Structure formats: C-alpha cells, structure tokens
Length: 392
Image (cartoon, rainbow, N blue to C red; front, side):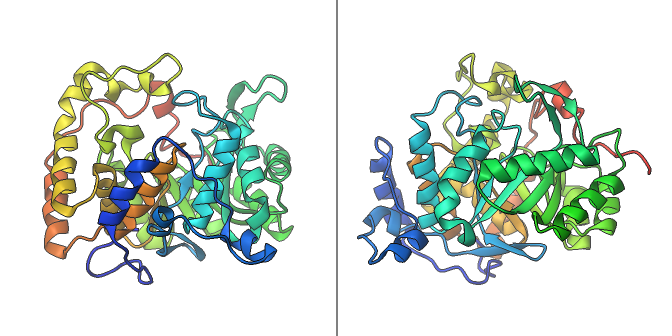
C-alpha cells in the first residue's frame, strides 16, 4: 500500500507505478487466471509470472490488534453479482481471489449475509489451497431464513452465533475463522453475552480474533473489556469521514485496528461517476441518498480534487483515495471490493503512492474543506449504525 515519507507500513518496497498504470490498462478485457504462489510452490517449479501482475505485487503489512494482514485487503461482497449487478462468472471470481493471493493480498473479507452465503462459498473454494497463508474475515449477526435466505432482522443470541459460525466453517472450507465480526450490534442482546460466546469459540479454536462493524462507542469499549477487539470495521473514505471524530480516537486509545469498508465510496471516488450516472435496477447504489442526481452533482468537487492529485502523483483517483486512507494511521486497512482484475491491480498499486508530510497536510486540508451532500445509506440501514447494546 501507499504510505507517506515516514513509511507507516514499515516493510513495504516500491515498484514502478508508471509501469503498472501502463500495463493494467490492457487487462480490462481479460482476466489472468493465476495460481496462488504458495500452492504452486507446493506442486513444483513456479510458472513464469505475468510481467504486469508481477510489477504490482503488494508487500506492505499492517496489524489489526495482533493480527498481521496485507495493507490492502479484498472485499468480496460484490462477487455473487447481486450488489452492483451481474459478474462474468463464479469461476472468474475464484480466479480473481487466487490472483489477489499471488499479488500479495492476505486479508479477505466476507459475511454470511452476502447473497446470502454465496460470497463465503466463493472465498472458501478460492482459498482452500492456500488456507494457511491468508486471513479470512467473516461476519454474523443477521437472522437469515435457511430456506429463502431472507433477512428477518438481527440476531446475536449466543446459540445463534454458534450455529452461524458452524455454518461459516463449512462454507469457507476451513477449521477456523481468523477474524469474526458482529455485523451489526443487536439492540436486544448485551454485548457481554456476545463477547462471552465468541470467547468460548476462541477457546474451541473455531475463531482466532474478533471485531465489531459499525458499533456504538460504549458497546465497543464494553466488548473490548471482555475480549480484546482486533478490529472495528466502518465505512471510511474521502467521501465519508465520519469515523474521524470519535471512532478512530477510540481505536488508537485501545489498540484496535480499523478496517474500511467502501473505501472508494462505492465507486464514486474512482472518478468513473458523474451527475449523469444512472444505476440499473439491480444496482443497490440506486437507493443511496448521496447518489441522487442533485447530490452527485454537488459532490463532484471531491472527484475533481482526487483527479488533480492523481495527475500530480502519476496515479489514479482511486489510488489517491486509498493512499490517503493508508497515510492516516498505520493500523488502518482498506478492503475495496472488486470483480475485475484491472481494478484489483489498480487498488493494490495504491501502496506505491507516497505523500510527503507537506503534501499530506495539503490534501487533508483540501478534503476537509469539501462538504459532502446526501446520507451514505438509506434511513433504515443508517439506523443500524452506531447502536449501543443493552446493559447485561
């Protein structure tokens, strides 16, 4: 991942970004089916690496609590094809994950609610050959009908968590989950009950680390007191900077890592959207208030800023956004989702974007001056964020 001159990642090396940008442009039409390096080594001499993918291998590592992961992870929510529209094929998604492994990505994020269940199955199939070389994160917390897949609200009762984890282990084709999140805080279950249940799962070896997604601050403190949290996962990008006020200071105080979902603003900060962008009926971004025609137009100054910095740094707007996140704190890890090889390479190429302290301050100030218009989520989904669990 990218970092500023002080190199918060510590053990990153840098490769030619210009070569990546030139080569990746030619990869949008076809996917390279890559075999994970670890699996290839186990079978014998490695095949010749593609020169473009070899030029953007990610080397930076960060820590979420005590858990060591790649500086940029891979979100897999879009891979079943029901979030932003259809994907090319399931086979291609498995191949993309395996290519990510070969390119140095070690953190793969999924959840039982994605599709539901299909994202976990894709991840399990893709990572089985290299299971001991990667970190798999998944999430529980929804009451999902086993027959229809419909969500019936939240459910973090202890017995439900245990059943959910057993189901995850089967779908992920593994004997342990490296990082288990509560997807959303259940307002009917004390967080101490949740933490005690996860602690039992840790003792059984089924879970290694745990975290919370979009929790209330006091709930996070209470959970951490029972079983230390490795990570909090919230939305965070130049488009949504809400965690800066209270969540990031809490993470720094308690030594908790921070994982950014939607680190590219669901595509907005890549520079590929405009006030004239219209979403298809099967694209869930159409219901996001900040994606209305008026709000897209009002938020274009942020895209223009990222485009200006992209020219200045010889990068892309997406890489500037990811590099900015990485430069904020050494324990912040973005997990951009993608279903395209070219985007995967572009994202991990952000590791090479560096800001001097002066440049970073200039960019921070410019981002802070921009007012973002429109809520980040529909009202019903937004009401499930920042929730405090009831007392025990």
